[in-house]
Length: 585
Ligand code: ATP
Image 1 (tube, helix red, strand yellow):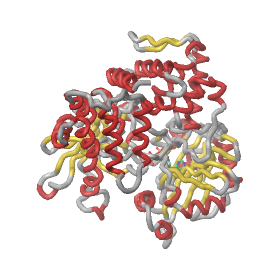
Image 2 (image 1 turned 90 degrees about the vertical axis):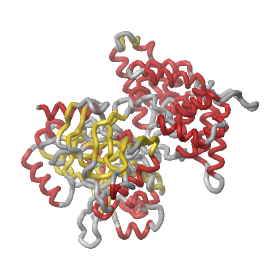
Image 3 (image 1 turned 120 degrees about the horizontal axis):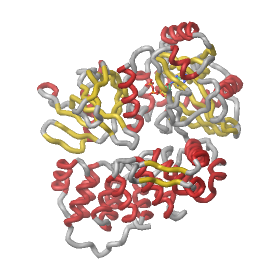
Image 4 (image 1 turned 90 degrees about the horizontal axis):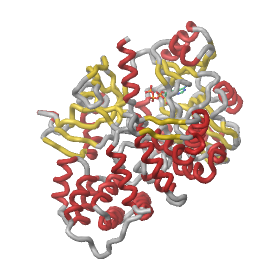
C-alpha cells in the first residue's frame, strides 16, 4: 500500500471533528487493507510504531528533525527553525518547504507504508556511537523521497504528534464496523451524524468481543488481524499473556461514604488507599516483571520486589495488581509518594536505593493465575484467591488492608484509621464486579475526603520577569477530549516554589519544559503537551477564554504526575463537565 493513500486518510480525519465520521473513515480503510498490511495500519493510524505495551521509543527530538528537513529540502536549518517558530508544527514546515523544492532527486522512490514503518522503527533500535547521524540519515532518506503531504505526516509520526484526533474508541469501533457489518446491518448516516443498526443485540455482542480482545492484548494490531481472519470466535479466544502489561483499572471518585455504597452496592469491600505507585506484577516460572501504571517496565529498579514475589507468592504463572508504598526504615511509617518517586527514574545504585527507600507491596487484585484469566471473575473470588496465594510479610508484601461491610459507620471508622496510618483515603470495591482494564467504570471508587484535583497537561507557559527571568512561569493547562485533543482550561502560577528543596519549583518545571518548546512569541512559549501536573482549584466556571469552554478558578499546583501519568491519562473533558454539573447542584 502506498504511504500516500494513508496520508489522504490522515487528511480526511484531520478535517472532521465528528467521532462517528472518523470511525467510518477508519473502518473503510481497514476493510480494504490487506492482511499483511493490517498490523502496520493499526499502528500508523494512531501515529504509533509500537503497541501500547511496548516501551520502545523513537527518541528523535525537534532539533534533529529540523536538520533532516534542511537536508531534504535544501533549505538551511536556520530558516527551517524560523518557520517552525511561526507555526509550532514541524509537520507543516516540512510540507511547505518540501513543496517549494524544485525537483526530485534521482534516487526518488515511491513510499510504501512498509518502507516508512520499517525506517521509523529502526530509529528505536539504534544505540551507541553514530546513533544521531544514523537517525538523521534514516529520516532524511524518507523525506527526500516524500511528497510534501507525506513529509508532513512522516515528521509528525517521528515526533509522536499525529494531530488527527483519533482516539482508542474510534479505532475499536472501526474494527467492528469493518469486519462484522453484514451481521448486524450497520449504516453510518453522515447527514445526521448517527449510526443505524438493524440488530442491536448482535452489534453489542461483537463490539464487546472487540473490546474484550483489546483488554487482554492491549494491541489493536492483533485484534484487527484476528477479527478479519478468525471472526468473533477468534476474538473470544484471545488471552492474556504473562509479560505483556495490560491497562490498569481506574477508580471513580466519590465525595462521601453513602455515595461509595451507592456505586458499589451493599455490602462492599473497603480497602486502604495507599499513597504509592501502581505496580502490575507478572511472573512466569522464575521471571518476574514489574510494570508501572504507564506500562513502563521497571523490573530492574526494584530487585527487592522481584525477590519477595518469588519468595512469598505461591504459583508458577500469575499477574497481580498492587500499590508499592515507601516507608521509613527508622520509624516504619509510610512515606508520601514523592519520597520514593526517584526510584522509578533511577538507573544506577539500585541496591543502595532499595536500602534507603524501601517499598512495601500492597496487593489488591489478581488478573491471571496458573493459566486462568481472572478478569471476568467477581472481585470477591479474586480477593479470596489472593488470600490463598500470598504469604503476608509486613514491610515486604501484604494484601491491602480491607473490610467487607454494609454499614456507613464501619466505613467511617475504617476511613479514620486509614488516614491515621498515613494513607490517602479508602477505596470501595464492588464485590461482584469484573476487572475492566483501562476503564473508570465505578467497580472501584476512591474516597479521599477532600476535594479532588484534576490532572492537566501543560501546553503553554511564559518566561518570568525580574529574578524569575530565566524561569518559565504562568503555565497554561489543558484536559483531554475523547479524540485525544488537549483543550485548555486555565493558567497556573501558584503552588510552585522558588526553591527546589521546598517542593516542585520553577527551576524544576523549566528544566522539564524547556526541551518541549515548539514555538516562541514574545514571552510566551508553546509546548509539546507532555508534562502532567495535578492541580486543585476553587471552582469550575464556564469561560469563553479557553477553547474547552471552561476555566478553573484559582488553580494551584499540588504535584507533578509525569512519572505515573501520560498526557492521554489527563482528566477528560467529560469528567470536567460532570464536575461542573455536580458543583451546580
Ligand atoms: P489519585 O490521584 O487519587 O491517586 P489516580 O488518578 O492516580 O488517583 P485512580 O485510578 O483515580 O488513579 O485512583 C486509584 C489509584 O489508587 C490506583 O491507580 C492505585 O495506584 C491507587 N491505590 C492505592 N491503594 C489502592 C487499593 N487498595 N486498590 C486500588 N487502588 C489503590
